[in-house]
View (cartoon, one colour):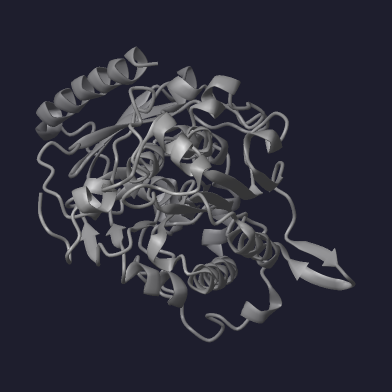
Length: 460
C-alpha cells in the first residue's frame, strides 16, 4: 500500500462500518472514528470520451476540467454494452447484461436487481439516497426505492415552462440536485445519482446561452469520417440503423460540423451544473467528505465510418469519459481499463461495504488511492443483442485488449469476424481478420472470446 498525498486506502476507510453496523451507526447519528463519505454519481447520456477538455476535446469544460485536476482520470474507460438502458442497468448493478437481464428499452430492473444495486445496498446500510433525472429503464419509476426521487421515464424533453419562464432540462436537473444537497439530513451520509439527458439528441435543443460555443472555430473531422470509410464497411453495416443518416451527414461536412457544435453546447450545460453542485457541496461544508464519480452511459459515433449512433463496437461508441474524485487522494491518470460494471462496486467499496459476488465489476478505489494492483484486467468482453424494433442492428460480441479488438457479428445476416490492430490502426480502418499473417492472433482472440463468454454467462 502506497501513500497518496498523505492518504492511504486504510486511512480513507478507517472508521467506515459496513452492512448492519453502518445502518445502526447512521441511525444513531454518528460514526465512531469517522463517517463514511457522501457519494455523488454523475452520468451523462451519449457522451463521447473526447468531448471534454480533460479528455482531449476541442472545447474546454472548465468545471469538469477543474474536477479532473483533483481526481483520477481513467483514460481507458468503456461500456460493456453501448446502449443506454443496458448500460444504465450495468452502472446500477455492476453486472453484465447477461446477469441483470435488461436487454431492451422496455425492460425494468427486477426487484432483486434493484435491491442489490448500489442505491439499494447503500440505502439498506443507512445512506440517504436520491435520484434526479433520466431513469432510462422500463417499468414503473422506482420512486419507493429512494428516499428522494425526481426522475422521469423515457427520453423526456429539453424545454419546460416553469413560472412563465422557458427553462432547459439540464438547468432544472441542477436545481433539483442542489436542493437535495442542501436539504439532505446531516446525521447520515448521502448518495445522490444525477442522470442527465444531455448530450443526447436532439442536439439543436441546447440552452440559448451556449449558442456561441465553437461558432467561429473550425471543426477537424477524422479520416474515418468520409464516404470512402463508409463504403469500406461490409454491406450489413451499411444497411444498419444510423448508416443512412450518417452517410448524409458525412456527404455534407458543414452539416456534420454544426451537429458537432450543437452536441458540445449540450455538454457545456452539463459542465455548468457540475460547477453548481460542487459549489453546493462547499456551502454545505461537505466538499471534503464527498466522493464524486463522473461518467456516461455510452459513447457515440458521429460520422465515423459514415455512421451515427452507438451499439456497434467501434471505439467512438464504447469509450466514455470517467473520473473518480476521492477527497485528499490527489490527481492521477490511470491507464488501467475501467468499465461501467466497475462503478457500483467502486461506490460500495468507498462506503466500506463489500460488494460481494453479485457484482461482476471491480472496485476502482485502489487505483484512485494509488495502490499497486498487479492483477488488473488485460482484456474484456463486449456484448450487444438489443432488438431495436424498427431498423436493423447486428448482434455483436467481442474482445478488446490493450492492442487488439476482435468483433464477432452473430446473426445470419451478418455472420462475420473483424480484427483491428488498435496500436497501428486506432481509427479501425483496416480490418485484419482475413490477413493470413494475423491467423495466430485471430485464433487466440477467438479462443479468448469463447472463454470470457463462458465466464460471464457462468456467473449469471
